Image (cartoon, rainbow, N blue to C red; front, top):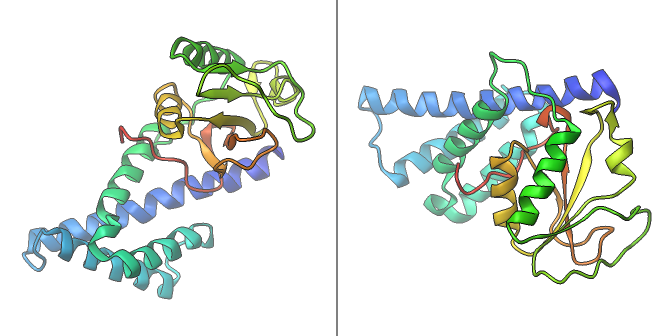
Length: 224
């Protein structure tokens, strides 16, 4: 990671996405309390959809969250109440308040955290591979249906001393939802790059950033 500038830029996203969802949920709550809005899935979705559109037009929030707002706007137009904007906003709020609370310093990720997670996934029955330098398209032959691959070079190059200082790739095949849940429970925010097309054949790629501070929305595990 290009040290302080990139970290500050990513931190800005983490803070701004929290500001977006917290503001939306607060305004929705105020509408309920005032009796101006019925607390039903349809009315809540309609309110939040209008709120998102208004936020885009007013440019109230930093451009770093613009893609999220536009995605939610399109989702609400295509799926209506099925877009589940309220649930999405609540889950984002819980996730980021847990990992990156505004009133606390972010927690560093250490090499021992990565090693412990590898051991944890092996204990869960996943095939864990980290002995290869991944510099070109590679196929990993695994006995288990679920596999978790790390680049041997990154296991050295992404750290200064014991601290993670550059984004690190987790390559995943199999049950992605279960992997995201396990990673989140073990203290990692995952940022999806691809579902299955990556340098490791048949594996998707997620990035883990220093201090869990990424420049876009992290994957939200099933338990949030």
